[in-house]
Length: 377
Ligand SMILES: Cc1cc2nc3c(=O)[nH]c(=O)nc-3n(C[C@H](O)[C@H](O)[C@H](O)COP(=O)(O)O)c2cc1C
Ligand SMILES: CCCCC(=O)C(=O)O
Image (cartoon, rainbow, N blue to C red; front, side, top):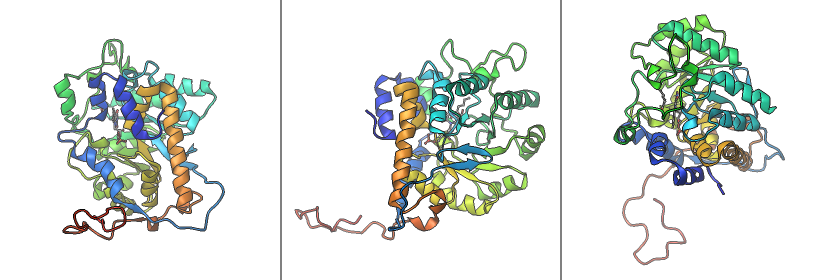
């Protein structure tokens, strides 16, 4: 049985082709940013309030008009059929059951329209958003946007950290460059004559600039979020260009290695947008306490990437349901323990950096009993 997000990784690895496990776990180059994302949460502390509790906690959130029952989004991840025969349909049903927003990857192995149909048929209801890599061919891009809008997606998430595809050296070593036979990027099929949904059809364009964002604003009424803005100056530019929200993300350490952990950048980005647009954070969120730290520092919600893939690989729709239930429970009890009854009660005063750095020199004499104090570092 799985009791934490990390348990799903252990369980999935036991059954998964190691090449696929590496694709999921891996990051760019030395994977320094992959490690930094998770480590950053461990470095911050929670300082709870007491005696102001409430019997129930409210985890509802509305983001750019999309209502969700928890402030945890499923960040876009490609190729769900690589790890489960139902692929994105299973993930989307689980997200809808939990009332969580799922961001469908442009590189999904089920077409976005089919994913939306499956959610509607399930009787549960939760918004789907669509992640887009703007293509150099704007007609193709517009056709993709139309597919997402026709499917009923309620926001577009434009990934802007991928001028070129990040160097996943595990994939290189493993020779993993392509989907296996039978799997396709279904959103791309028939966008143009003869297009068969090949991964190579997705162009990572190094020429993208702010004019493309202005152009996109002109072809859709859907709210547009940018995914992968890290510099506060770019956050300010995003606001100036009428962007509706930011997904503060370093692509889970899969694009430019050695960029800071997203949590570390959060206060600067929140200050830069100054409440004008919502900021969602992803990267290394594995626990309810992680989510609470990000929310307290000004994020409106958080996203999870790898845990969803591991849960899907381990247990299909049931696995993802269980993962989201666990995160809901953790969030709920963290709020209770912090004296918060809802997300609005999560304020920066709940979070601190350790007052003491490492204590130099031995703090416990050799042979002394370590159990009662002394060890600070
Ligand atoms: C297997 C995998 C596939 C991904 N595919 C996409 C994608 O298609 N589009 C995108 O914008 N981000 C993609 N990402 C990045 C995620 O959206 C997200 O930013 C990242 O996984 C968050 O970090 P976490 O995995 O530590 O939660 C992918 C990440 C992984 C692990
Ligand atoms: C063309 C698929 C891109 C997937 C992706 O963004 C990732 O693996 O991080």
